[in-house]
Length: 112
Image (tube, rainbow, N blue to C red; front, side):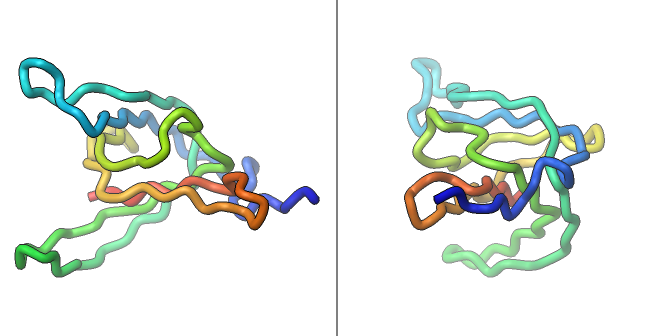
């Protein structure tokens, strides 16, 4: 059965460049680039405060939605950077929304 895309490519119009870091560090202690993506997304601005475990506030600045799995080689998207509207923002959280058959319907990246 083919599942309908919840984020169709027709609504992805905002250019974005993503750089995702590996979970391990390089030999010199710097983050190692695991994958990059340049393409289009559906971007939604938001202003929300989140209370973390170590009692710091984080101002979330937006959410980028992509049709399908933009990083099929990565099991998780933990950290990295995104260049959107000419500004570099940190990746706060990444998620791959799956269909009942296990395929990825869309990818969501939350930015700070």
